[in-house]
Structures are given as structure tokens and as C-alpha cells.
Image (cartoon, rainbow, N blue to C red; front, side):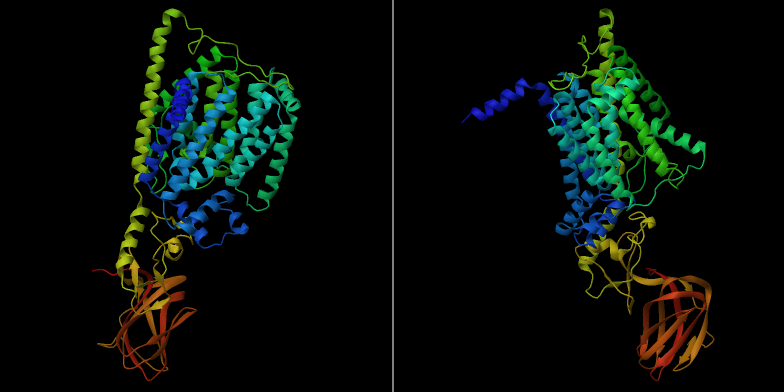
Amino acid sequence: MTTAPSRTGGWLRSDRIGTAALVMIAISVLWRAQVAARGFLAADDYVLITQAAESRLTVTHLLELYNNHLMPGGRLLIWLVTEYVGLAYWPYVLLMSIGQAILGITFFRLLRRMLRPSALLLLPLGLLLFSPLTLEASTWWAVGVNMLPMQIAMVLAVGAQVGYVQTGRRRHLVTLALSVLLGLFFFEKSILIVPLVFLLTVACYADGGPVRAVWTTIRRWWTSWLVLTVLSLGFAAAYLTRSESSLRRPESVGEVFSFLTQMFGSTVIPGLVGGPWQWLGAGDGAPVAAPPQLGTWVGWTIVAAVVAATVRQRRRAGRAWLLLAAYLAMVAGMLAATRLGSAFSGVAGGVPRYVSDVVVVAAICLGVAVVGLARTTSTTVPPAPADPPEPGLLGPVPERYRESVTVALVLVLVAVGLGTVWTTARYGDEWEAKSGRSYIDTVRIEMASAPPDTVFFDAPVPDNVVPRLSSPYNLQSRFFRAFGTRPTFVDETDNASVLDALGRIQVATIVGSTIQPGPQEGCGYLVSTGKTVRMPLNEPRFHWHWVVRIGYLSSADGTATLRLGDGEAQFPVRKGLNQRFFRITGGGDTVELTVTSGEVSLCTNEIAIGDPAPRPE
């Protein structure tokens, strides 16, 4: 009865590095889940959920592009959550936490396969698990649903290629293909896995100069490149036939320089050493990196020192850092070609989610540089070179300086760790501020106590919940499709309500143009059956979809028609003092009112044309 526990305890005691890794992974997942849970859905999340609520689970829906992104895997998960849970955040937090755990476990397995046994394996693992550059991928669903699968696919694909290099077994080629397909199923940017695998093989497993190393890599592992080429061409054909070109021309050389300076100086380099330490709020979305100038220079200093020290100690380190530089160049080129020349180019370099995948490559390169490669075991291919044994992390540091250097390294690690804690905590503060959550919670409470006949005209939700750039998915009728108790929307009614900016139900009025006072004392404009009366507006309305409110006193029941330019709308007239709200499409500086049926005499001095808004108290 005590066999299993003792075996478990024995494994934990015998594999202290593995135990420490599992503890780090658990801490990372729980910490990131806590940060994520402080926030809520944001911006693109609502659009994707609305699209899922409006669609059936079909291939057409799964393959529909979103902002030119092909993400059938993400659409599938969103559809399932929307169908069976509704508009909720906790399922997405759970899914992102599971993705984080899978990423951490698979990455540690890769480190053990690719590198020498060493406690230093925990350094690259820590970089992957805790780098602030991946905060958005573990908190904002619209980012995590793309980036986490891509990161997992990167790790699996590299692991498969390393396994193939080390053993020569063809089953690793199947894993390689499936890994790339997994990434592409969630994010088209996963196509970068293909050049990453090739460049990593060149940098880590082929000897000689650049030309010889490339040729050796192509010749020795040609089956990998055949598989990846077929996959790449197939995906490119499928994606390019469905997508529109996202390529943009930068406006100037200065724009490109500013972008590169921001990307490397404000985001990548500080993010790799625990920064950016300060964030710039971006509404309900994730904040933008805004490091202090001193922090930027400290980050560059630490990175330069690590690169210089590892290159001096280990011959493969130089190639590893060149691999990271090459991948950064690919990411920068892709971002420059698709983000510059737009309204958002000024902050494109400061958005960490655009470079979250870089952390995977940086962690691998750090491991190669600090720990060194493991030896291959293949009997069918020549063994890939491994680094010679080294006397620990300090390498050739003279004995008399080792204590001082060790203290300095510990202090740097502590500083990076504390910086990471501070950066993550400040990110959590920014992520916690969610206008969308407050708006939805208020609407839920208000709808639960509203009378059954409460109706609304469709209108946009506040810009700080869903920006108007997402139109028409910012309309309330679409935003609330996945809602439990949805508001009822109409095109005409006697009594309209409106949701204010906080989500409270208010009595509606119309804000816009009004008719000028009529000539008849105590009546305004007198309209009789069969007659048309023209009423000038206090200011013209451009041609658009408007809502009209008319307040009137009628002698009998009937119908009337109101015209605005080339648009007209018919509405019922009831005896007595009443009002009516209705939609009209048109524009102009005058309205015409005609009583079309019944023996009616109608007085009105209240006609407003514009948008529904809360009536002032």
C-alpha cells in the first residue's frame, strides 16, 4: 500500500532538477492565472465571441479570416465556449492556463533532450515561463488563442527535429509535420517555424563556415526540408487565396528607424531581463511597454554581458545568438511590412504580443549558450558536434575572481527576478481595469429588474468596450448575442429606453436636430388629414440612419408619414397626448409631415432627429 508513494518520493529526491522545473511551471501557471483572472475579455474577444454566437459550427465559419488572420483552431474553441457557456471569461482563463502548463512541460522536455544534464537548464526554463513579453499571451484570450499554440508548436517542432538529428528515426518527421500543422491551425504566423527549424539545425548541428553549414544541413537532413516545404507551399496556397494583402509601405526611413528602436529598445531587450518595469495603459486592451531610459540601458548591458561571456566560454554560443538575431530579423521584417504605414505604427514596436514568440527562441539560445548541446545517438547519420566539457558556468574565470563573479551573477539574477515580479504586478494593475466587465455586469443587473416591455433602439456599445473600428460588431444587438438575458431591440415604439455609458437603463430621448418652433400658439404646427406641413430644422442632418422622436396631440387615431430628404417613415397616430420613436434613413434641413388616414387634426412642436440618448433628469 505504500509502494506508489515511496516510488514518487524516490523520483522526486533523485530528480531534483525535474522537481524544481515542475515547481517553477506550477508557480508560473498559477501566477499567470491570477493575473489573468484580475482582468476580463477585451476588444477583439467580443468580436470573435459575437461571430461565434451568430454562426453555426461549419467549415466556412472556422476558415473565415479575422483581420486577415486564419485561426480555425481558435474559432473552434470560441464557438464551443460560446455555445455551452455563453459570454464568460473563466473558460478562457482555464484554457490559457492549460496552454501555459503544456508549454512549460514540453519546453523542459526539449531542454533535456537537446542540452546536457545540468541545473542550469532552469535558467532558460525560467526565461520562458516568467518573461513579461509573454504576459499578453497568458491573459488576453484574443492573443493567447493564437500565440500559446504557436509557442507550443515551436517547441514540439524543434524537439522533433532535434530528435531526428540525434537518432535518425523517421517517426520524428511525422511529429515535425504535425507540430507545424498544429501551429498553423491556430495562427498563420506559425509559418515562421519552418525557417526557425532550418536555422536552428544549421546553427547547432552543422560544422564549418556559413556556406558549408547550410549545405551540410540541406544534404544530411533533406527529408525534413522536403516535409516542411510541402507543408509551407500547401498552406501558402490555401491562405493566399482567401486573404487580402496586409503589406504596407512605410511612410519614411525615420518611421522604420523609430519602429526598430522601439521594438528592440523598449520591448525585446528589456523584456528579456524582467522589463519593461513601466506600462502605458491602452484602455481595455493590454498595456504598451514604456520602460524608463535607465532601464533600457541596463537591459542592453545585461544582454551584452551575457552574450560576450557565453561566446568566450562556449564555441556554439556565438551561433546560438546569431540564430536569435536571425529570428528577430524575420519578426521585425514581418511586423514592418504589415504594421508600418498605418494609424498604429507609432506604437507597433512597443506591443509585447507581437514578439511573444521570440521568447521561445531566446530561451533555446540561452540554453545552448550556457549549458551546451547534448551528443547525438544516431547510428545512421554522423554524430552532430557537442560542446567539450566546461568547468561550470564561470568557465575560464580565474580562481581568485570566482567568488566576486558568483556574487555578481547572483545579484543580477535577483535583480532580474525582482524586476519581473514588479513588471508583472504593474501589468496586472493595468489589466484589471476593464470597462467591458463593469458595463456587462451592470447590464445584467439592470436587465434582471427591468419591466418586460423595456425596448431599445440598436446603438453602439461604448468605445472603451468595443472600438468603433470593429463596426458593425460594436452594435448592442450583436454585442449581446451571447448574453443570457438579451435586451429587446425595435425599430419603432411609443416608449424607448437606452443603455448609458455605464450600462444603466435610462428613459430615452433623441439628441440631434429639432424643428424650429411652429407658428400657431399653443399648437406649434397644425397638421390635418391630407395636408403636408414643412418644418425647418434648427440644423441640417446629413444622410444617415437616424431615429426620430415626435411628441404630438391628436384629435383621433390615424396614420402619418414623415419625410426627411428622400427618406420617409409611416407611423401610427393615437388620440390624445402621445409620442412615437421610429427609424428613418435620409438627410436634409427640413422635414415634412402628412396625416395620411383618419379624420385627424394633429399639433406638434416636438420633432427631434438624431441618436437615442438618456433623457436629462
